[in-house]
Amino acid sequence: MIGTLLAGPVRVVNLGLASFARDLAAHGTAVAQVDWSPPAGGKHELLLALAVLEKDAVEKANQAALQKILAAEPMLADVRRAGELIPELDGARLMLHAGPPIEWGRMCGPLKGAVCGAIVFEGWAPDLAAAEKLAARGGVQFAPNHHFGAVGPMTGITTRSMPLLVVENRAFGNRAMCALNEGLGKVMRFGGNDAEVLARLAWLRDDFGPLLGAALRPAPVPLNPLIARGLAMGDEMHQRNVACSSLLMRILAPAMARVGSPSLPRALEFMGGNDQFFLNIAMAMGKSILDPARGIAASTIVTAMSRNGTDFGIRVAGMGDAWFTAPVEMPQGLYFPGYSAADANPDIGDSAILEAVGLGAFAMAAAPAVAGFVGAGGFAEALGYTRAMSEIAAGRNPKWGIPALEFAGTSAGIDVRRVVETGIAPAINTGIAHRLPGVGQVGAGIARAPLACFEQALTALAQHAR
Image 1 (tube, rainbow, N blue to C red):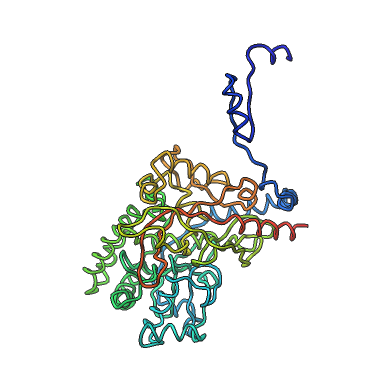
Image 2 (cartoon, rainbow, N blue to C red):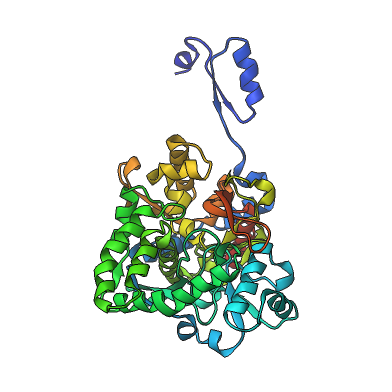
């Protein structure tokens, strides 16, 4: 054996520092470079936590969480007024927002802009200046959407009179909610708050929402097969929803026509002109899928990722409703003409629930067109993102196949242990909001979840496991 190994020319495999490989190559030695770094960045306390969590009980808990995720049967079932679905909204001047908890003084520009617009929309103040004063003196209570079974894109503002989509997970009897997608341009989810924005919200409240709810109640729409078809047609459900929005409109148009509303022509025109209409539905679906895994003791599976424009937060199955937070990062991407990174707000929105359920950047290989839109490159880069994200997932979802991967299922169940061990931070496809209130969207890109959130969660999980 030794003679065989020593026969022939010297062959070198270099781990870690590439400079060693370059020196060898410069002297004519064949060398294979393997990029390597110590697990968990070599941090002693994290390595100890990983060792504590390498237990059969953790593996069993993660399999239990994964089984619940994979068994989900989400159905788009209804549209109802937010105060009807969340009674707390009718009982006080309460406003829900994206991300983990935050107070007025720490809110970013677009979130403050959306808050002020929503205050005027609800009639709590006559104009934006008065709305800002009301919010600043504590005249409005704030809470995360996630605390009330809801999600919202970008600023994520939810108030009592807004119509909410309802997705029911028939496998476990839970539901999740999300506001209707407002369309493109200047919208409240990107901090817009002028008369045009408020007029559109009023139409969604008074006409479109009731029409859509009346169409859905007799015939809820199964979402698993819709997602599967969308992936096969080039969607990843975060920044590209063209296929699913179109497929949903084909399903709903006859039912909406049977309602007999005079708003039908405008409603169909609105849906047909909004390629991102399905986004909010997918978000509510994602939350409905992940919520049943909350509270599974010892599980290291992520049940929520979210950001409020200031903080990034995650929740983990084994830690219930606890938030683990860190400063949110800036997205890297492409900007609309006239804007640059100097105009951008840090990442914001509950829409990272899509990556948490294995869509968005995790499924970018199904939607290579998105890679160019968010400035990530081409098909090879899209494929690279999907493969890298699979390294931090506990399994795959066989219901949602990716054609470019021989219809292998999308990733399912982000494992905190794998994130910390590998140092691979979850990637998130995202829109980019202007940092000032009232301006709106200025681009699209890719953001990364801060590793500090996962390190905090890992440490807390290990303390519970000891």
